[in-house]
Length: 393
Image (tube, rainbow, N blue to C red; front, side):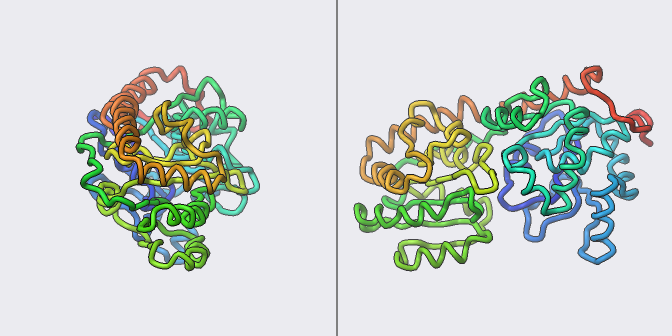
C-alpha cells in the first residue's frame, strides 16, 4: 500500500474534523500525519502514525520549531518521515505547505496542497504576524513552482487563488465531502425552535450578526433558543452582546464532534452567517453546512460566494444578503414556522450532499489524483534538492 504524508503545521485544531475524516476515508493509501506540534485539546488522530518536529513546549523545543520554519530542516523530523518511505505529501493550507516544502524538494516528493480559504483570501499584512505564515511569504513563489497540484475546496477559492498569483493550470476544485451514511432526521424528532451555530468565534464566522438577529427571531417565535457551539477570541464580546436575551442564547463552548452531530440531529435550523473579515479572511467552503445538510438539517447563511456553493442551487437565492440581520432573522423564522418549506429544504440539502459531497466518492477521486501525480513526474517542476525518493533508506 502506498503512503501519503498528511501535513498540517498544528495537529489538529478541534474545528478541522475534515482533515482526519478525509484521511480515514482513504482506501489505497496509508496516511501518516506530520506537523510542527500537537495541539493541546486538539482532535484525536491516534488511528494513524503521527510525527512532529517537537512534542513539548520546552524553550529548546520551541527553538527547534523556529529553526524548522526558517530553514526547513529538523533532522529527527526528516528521518522519521523518510522512514515511512512516503510516495507523496498532501499539505492542508498553502501556508503549511511552505513549511514542508524544503523537505519535499530535498527528497523530490510530489506535493499536493489543499487550499481552504484564508490561505488565498487574507492580505499579506495578515501573514506577517506569525512565524508559520511568514514562511509562506518567503516561499510562496517557490511553492507555486514546485507543487504538483492545488486542490481548491470551492470554485470561489479557485478564483481567489488565481487573483493571488497561483498558477491557473495547477488549480482544480475538489470537495472534501462528508459522510452520508447516516439517515436524515425528520422534523418530528427535532426541537421545534432550536437554532444552532457551530464554529470558531472569530470575525469571519459572523456569529455577532446571528446574536443580534435573535431579537427579531424571538419576537416572532417566543420559545426560540440559540445554541452556540465553539470558542474563540470573540466569545466574551458575544456573551456580553447576548445578555439582554438571557437564557434564549446558550454558549456551550468547544464540543466533541459526536456532541456536535447530536445537536445537529435535534436542532431545527443551522445558522452560519459567515462574512468577509476586515483582513480579507473568508470561508473556503464551510464543512459544517455540509454535515448539517447530510443529516437533513436545513441551513441559513449569508449569500456569500464560497458559502452558497455548499447549498443546492434552488436554495441559494433564498439566502439573505451579507450583513442583513433582518433578512437572516426572517429566513430562520420561515424554517421554524413553515413545515412544508422545512421539509423541502431538508430533502434538497440531503440530496445535494449525496450527489456532490459524499466523502467516500470524493476520496476515491482524491486517490485517483494521487495516482496521476505520482505516475507523471514530468508535470512537476523540481526544486534544487539533492535527494530522491528512491534514495530513502
